[in-house]
Length: 143
Image (cartoon, rainbow, N blue to C red):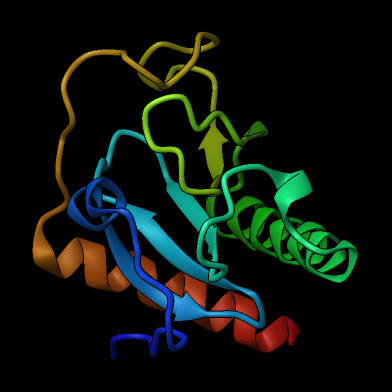
């Protein structure tokens, strides 16, 4: 099931190319980064023109924090990872988005960053679908 986009909202083509839709939350479109080396989710606030957190209204900022925490908790429960990395860099893709990455000792480049390390290892379609379903189920069960 592909989430519905808000009228007037468009996703940066690089985010569209590198990730897959999982679920629409109250503010954000939740996407799964197509790199199976790390369980990696991306939250994209559906607000046209937003590049920074401070570009969002105070209410949207609070909602973004709530949704980020909800997604991070679900990812930690699903993966039993050692650490959740959360970041909003936006140097290459200016559209406001938050990365939520599950990290575990022994994963590629532990304890270093995931950005710019090695080559992407895309999911097989079945594995991508299964992981996205686990994420949806966990988030919806907490909703």
